[in-house]
Amino acid sequence: PVFCSCLVSLLYTLYLFLANEEHGVHHAQEFENRFWTIFAVLFSTALFFAKDSPIAFGRWSPSLGFLCVVLAGYGVHIWDRHVHRIYMSRQLSLRRNTTAMSSLTRLNDLGIRVEDQLMNINS
Image (cartoon, rainbow, N blue to C red):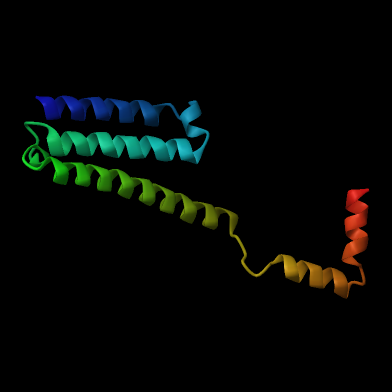
């Protein structure tokens, strides 16, 4: 009953998280990342340490169970950040060939002195 209770509680929390898209936790990706990391840590804790869990090896080897909980949380944290980076790079279609040096070279080619532009900005 312990593992099932934890699983039901986590599933209800997941439902609330997904059902309330307008809530403040969805306003920043870092908040969502924290949610998924904490969710993974709580789920893996129940999975590795609950009495009635099918793989409760944390009860016989607490250090191994703790290590697996930390690895599961860190893995979900890294995976969520990686997925978000891929999404952001595709959404913005970032170009890597534009640099500050090429912009300065382009200004010089147009006959515009960089020092003059900096003076205009500062005044």
